[in-house]
Image: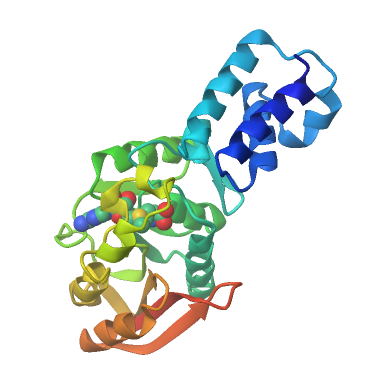
Length: 279
Ligand SMILES: C[S@@+](CC[C@H](N)C(=O)[O-])C[C@H]1O[C@@H](n2cnc3c(N)ncnc32)[C@H](O)[C@@H]1O
């Protein structure tokens, strides 16, 4: 079978299984199995597809047709222009979260050698992005799940990023985590109702990375009081939030003594980041 036919066959399978972007995903799967960038694929369309690569592509397509996440099948995904290794047990980095990085980088401008903590670090996409964009920062990453930590460590090695990764519970941080200029956090924030209505792909991701208790707010409610005293005066606590959570999160920050609460919107005009500053 020539490569173009393989792409067509896989695209048809994915489309008939309700995969929205079937054409792009089919090309992604085939180019992944041929170890070639997707942009170079059209040049190879008339060539016979290597048997082993074809078999692998059809096997991956079969799993994708059952809505297993493409990112887990490929074992990697892009975030802020870098490739991160992912697999079962770790949240797939989302484009939404790039706004958390941008907000942190803007806040950290003019603060050389600042100390930054990434809470609920997952794959490490936020911590590593901050460190790579600003090598002068001293970055710490805290993560509870051993499975996620495994990917965090792999990504640290992949990017040769000097981030101090710690296994721990954000609700009970080690005493040593003190005096930060900036704390960023993309916690689990889905509600019980959200968890009932997960897209099939998201259901493959770890519940511990998604679920923020009944109202989705458990981390926002508890963490501000815990971390207020771990920030330097003027230091910022920056949360990524779910749709419509801004007022509740702002209120929790105010209750914990944070000032100058501000919101940041994503490209779809949705508030995605809420910040508070230690007085
Ligand atoms: C929404 S994911 C965010 C992951 C990553 N920061 C990102 O943006 O892709 C939340 C992460 O918090 C971790 N987590 C859940 N409960 C935690 C806790 N009590 N302490 C530390 N990490 C926790 C999960 O394992 C998961 O990796």
